[in-house]
Amino acid sequence: MLIAALDTSTLTLSCALCELERGEVRLLGERTERAPARSGPQGPTGGHGGRLPGALSDLLVAVERKLADVEGYAVGLGPGSFTGLRIGLATWKGLAYANQRPIAGASGLAAMALAAAPAVGEGVLLIPLLDAKKAEVYAGFYRARGSRVEAVAPEAALAPAALADRAAALRAEGERLVAFGEGLTAYREALVGGLELASAGERPPPLVEVATPPALAVARLCASALEGAPYDSAKLFALEPHYVRASEAELKFPRGMGTRATKP
Image (cartoon, rainbow, N blue to C red; front, side, top):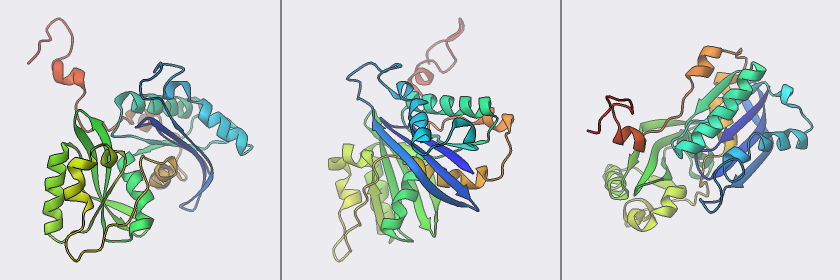
């Protein structure tokens, strides 16, 4: 089963073509591109919208396949950039709808944890972090279990100080933590005390180089939902981004923007 996987939750676009057979996902080809950080137009030529579905088309050519050969779509649902998530999900849903193919979504933070798991081993608490802007990070809390990862707490948008306090409490309970991702890079100074430094006598945490959600890991998280699944329009239309926190518009206009809408 040929799977097209995608994540657009950050400025990094990750697209992959994978072969899914009996629960195993094999990478055929992948493409990773970094969009400009608002240094250019963010419309059709400057952001993910200008790279999709072209990135998929290029991969199909590279592996000598056609769009009609794609039998399922896997997409990262966030959290992350609201605009990036909408672009990626709309593109994949449109392709799945037009070609009558099944589609499934997965957390980008879970995908980061799955990609990092081989480097840390079982039992370690994985904390993938993305920059949520507004002086916050998107944080996931996952534990590796064999070839899977399990959420041990809900994903959240947290101030770095709050995350550092939570991590310190977990370590006091005996947890061994490994934090990684673009969010760690963005707020390293605020997070270093709670997340990166080992206590006296404790082994230093392993180096994890996963910065953003990789499409291959998204495909692996979606494999069980896609393999052998028929096209289901109800599931397709119900698939939505996982934003974690409210948008600016929702905060400013909680009752909508109609004639009766007022700010709180």
